[in-house]
Length: 582
Image 1: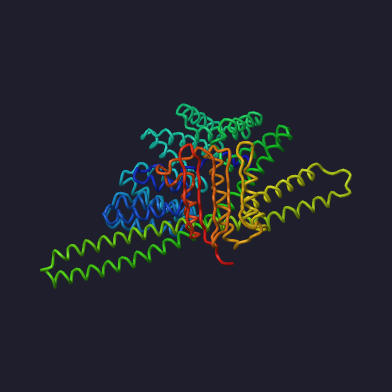
Image 2: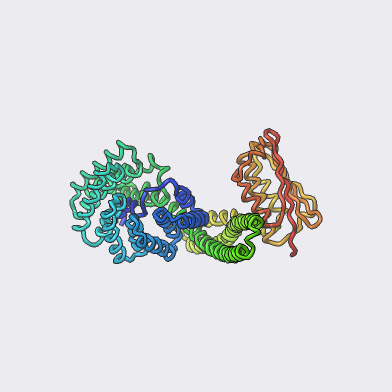
């Protein structure tokens, strides 16, 4: 299993979509890369509406393809397919020369949901339209995906499309595409049992990738070389050296998923070489990387669910308000036409009235946009708080308890044993380490001192934890340190203070920080001050130091925030928050 994993390590990277990005769509690609799917979908929706209104149907279809990819990133295949089919219907209605790209993406969507028959159907249909439209870029991707599908079903057909893709790559002088085609040849000849021929193409890929400094292709080649040395030459030492080289020279380029694969291959190589110490070391590293992947998967899944919910909620609000506003505009237009027919003599007066009405409508639209953006920020903040609490509960109440129980069982088994196997001792140590890491992560998400002792103790603890030889934080409380507030209020205030302290540590270059809490007139007063370098408030950008989210948090609590700062004179933030009733 380890060796087979290696040969297909980078085979299907092209499967995910084209690199043909149009300049006007850079923002959609940016939001997708940053995983800001709500902003990306809203941006794509607004751009689509403008293009459709301007009758720029070709551009509209290209935006739709990118919008479908955003939904695909959230595993919302139903919406992704719906967007593509709507775009295809528009393209067919207006006889546009952009159908091939849409249909190719339909094939990709069906491939992702494992509907291979429909995937083949749409890839062949995309091939027909790409040839008709002379869309070489789409045709290259169609050939590659047909090669990919046929490697699992019919190798003779896979060879045909592998050759066709290679010819187009050479014709368009696409160096990265040629590298990828060479790698496809390596995979094909490996699958049909001709390793020597496969090695020739692998060497060609490596020379071309080195010459043009194409890092992903270099990593792919080295990975496949490691496989080749071990599988076909039985040279496990050379294979291990190759995988070690990848990890050493291209560490920054590798994901945790890549690291798991390379570590497992190194485990296999060193086991064959009889170096069980290194094999065990890389097995432990693979376990740690896999553990990080599990944590990331849990976090991504939770975030995906929350994001889908927020998208549904925002889109529903947007549609309802837009519909009401459109109906109101239609009624106003009818009234205008009636007045024109009845009062032609008051045309000038009516003109001013109409202009005033349009201005009000534009202001309402601006207010609507502002309200939607504020709702998005607040929903995101609430989602983050809920996510923190859920993850902390899962980690503390479930995973931590299970790890602790497993550790106790192992310890109980070892009691009274004279000759304890080293593996069991290591297993108990690993369980304890995992338990401690899960506990620390749970405490980081929701500090136990906050839930048990309250905001004042938690803030004091926060100041002490962030104090060191470089910066000292002083906490002052005017009132009873035992005072408690509603749990949700305490949590939100705590994370506001935490974010501000974090800003001081990261950006201020201060040596002293002061945090003051005071309850006055049923309001909680926060003063956060430092003696750092400060900044020019007039030139402050909305994204600076994360203050946008802090302002949104304060506004969400119906509070007010004042920022006083000058260059070289430190910074003072004054926050007033109404205390909710218990």
